[in-house]
Amino acid sequence: MTRVDTFAKDRLPAATDLPEFLFDGPGLHMPDRFNIAKVLLDDRVAQGQGHRVCLIGADGVAWTYAQLQVEVNRMANVLVNDLGLIPGQRVLLRGANSPRLAACFLAVFKAGGIAVGTMPLLRAKELATIIDKAQISHALCDARLAQELQTAQSQSTTLSHLLYFNGPAPEGSAAASVQTLEALAAHQPTTFDAFDSAADDVCLMAFTSGTTGQPKAAMHFHRDILAACRCWPVHMLRATPDDVFIGSPPLAFTFGLGGLLIFPMAIGASTVLLEKATPDVLPAAVAAHRATVMFTAPTSYRAMATQAQSHDWSSLRKCVSAGEALPAATRQLWRETTGIEIIDGIGSTELFHIFISADEAHAKPGATGLPVPGYVAAILDDQGHPVPAGQVGRLAIKGPTGCKYLDDPR
Image 1 (cartoon, helix red, strand yellow):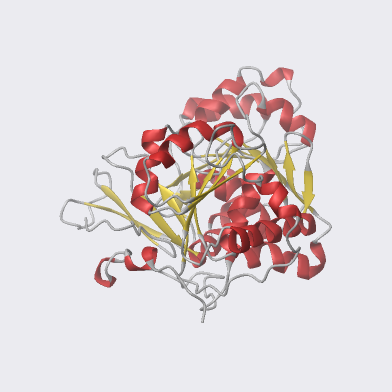
Image 2 (cartoon, rainbow, N blue to C red):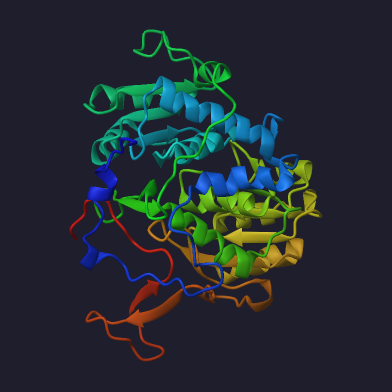
């Protein structure tokens, strides 16, 4: 019998405090057991689509689905065979957007672990808080971001396995004598059977920004990730396998993880992962890769609109905005300079991705949209009662995903 770490499962909200989930939408009746990495990657290859390009890096690296499968399998073998990962343990991931970081997420999912993405700009104190709260035992880190994580590790009693990619561990560090992730992976088998996960096993902890105090860990099941693929992308984005995704949000942010990795893989499309996707870099990357679907924030759209005439946007057909309110003036400026209507959306770390949106045909200046099919919404007063139209209240959402904080009785 496989040994399993039950830390996350034991710290889910009590059954009486869990959200009321809705699974009556199209495609939301899911099996009781599946591993999201198998669905996104192994099944795609098994369907004869392994030759299609999946991930494209800023350095020109391009992996097909079949090549990515090999990389993920080798890395999953490293996690299990070399680092002793058991299903349910938390693995901190640290790095800028890249094919390697994307493969790290998938390898953790496939091995039955729980991925904990962290923003590259986090300092040691913030990382230490995350490590302590999630009781993280393993970490995969870009060597260029080693310093802050090393400092955080020195304060931790749980983080015992730290492995670097994109370069060796810094000299003098505890991991300096350990080979890199890539070197260890090169000697591992190219096959790996995905862990037989339950649909409601936790596979992702996404930490909030901590605007109301200490950051909270929003936990997501394998089924949450798949449900998200079958709601907003299907009904609002409507991308195709021939699309090329690109954008600026980090994979550590669920807006980026969904938009730049999970959603394109769910339809067999390609995605460009840029380490630096600032407004002065993104336009040229769109043209160079003939990107067709772009994810970024309103501030980036406004900055790029001021220089739009000097760039080639001819390949671009869909633009998605989230992360902050989209001003009507920014929407209009982008449309006037590129001819493209922005798809706006409201999402949250707690629900994984966008749950209120409008497609291009129904976009209205100053309005975000309507509940995405699969979700319902209401505006409630402080007592939880619906307020009359036109009155201010609190937004309540119900759907196939919901808020599940780690060990938070509030």
